[in-house]
Image (cartoon, rainbow over all chains, first blue to last red; front, side, top):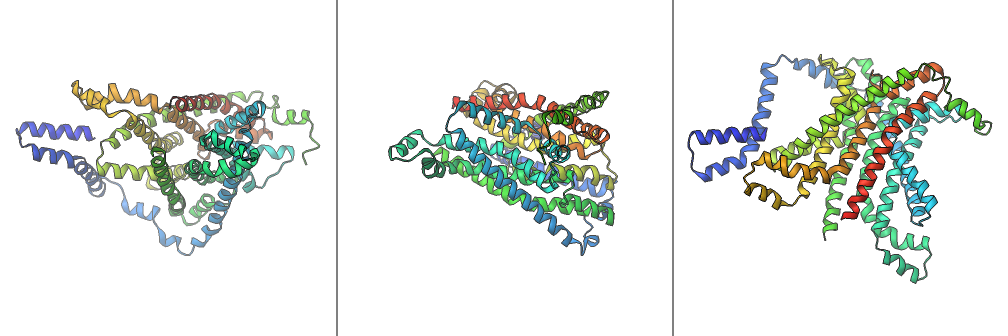
Length: 279
Length: 229
């Protein structure tokens, strides 16, 4: 788009033999902004006046908040459920990841191989497949998990692989001399991990950890498949009752509101950590 | 609960090949559909992501604002929600997509943002003098991207890109919520019919067969990058 518009302006300039360089550079500077404004204007004008889209239908089906009136309280309990699921799976994932990373830092070849196999396995299994497997296959051997618990179990298994990697890179980022110094002070390996390595590693760990949190929040939505009464399930029920897609739009808006602050926070953290690593 | 199960019982339940007799066809059909969705989405999102990155590098504030909004929107929207809105919501407006189309549209829409960001950081990582050298050689902007920047950026970006591709293949499994018989759905159909979880286990193995090599490849690439630094 930009290229085409630049080319068009160039052609026009050459056609009218415009030699004034100052004006031309000014046009070049504001050209992309102007062009995107024109593109959006084009679509808006086209959509309103010339296409045969039915905008009243759009408003009625997608933003019909009159029909939703008095039904908002239905979304409170699934919202809390989702936050609960993501909290517990995040907590468990961080716990497992931390323990595995610490075990891995002892450099036992056999155990390290096992942990690497675990990480590879759970990094490559799709979340949906694991949730379905845990919920639909385990009951055959008598291991009945409530749907919410099965989602928590599979999410914490999945994301513990990522947190293991994150914690490991964090521990690796701390200088080895620090460990030796801690040993010289008479600290055991666990003690030096607790008092010397981990506090320094956390600076490296926190930004990727927030992106894992975002992923967990997003992945809770697949709990819909195993019949957890969460936001989407409720929205689809209500969609059937009131005959409009507004609940779905409302739910996606809710997700957006929950996740967006974390996203903004994490991108700010990433910028910060990039600045730190430069210094 | 678990203790009255011996190894033979587990074999009988999870690896019961008699259940799979005559059912492999459906499972492989599901695998084919999954591969189709994944391949189409990977191709489209990579190409579109490259374009998004190139537009973002032009540093025009309006395009950047638009594309950053798009990126944050994609980072904050679960794929399940997007799929349901596209597949079950848009028909209310008389816009109907087939399950395959809506799967591809949603996956491409979401992953283009991530891949674009990856490409942008890759192109920005290339030394600026390269662009200047290319321009002094008389290459125009498109040629600079085509011959100088994109090939180098590709090498830098490859680990992230492979990661995103793995993510795309994983996300195809979410399309079970649509009426499309991809691998997981096929397995679920057979499992429900035969009342045995063997198909689910087999489908998991198929996913792993595709994804584990990719993951190992990605991890190795990441390690290489770390060592080179």
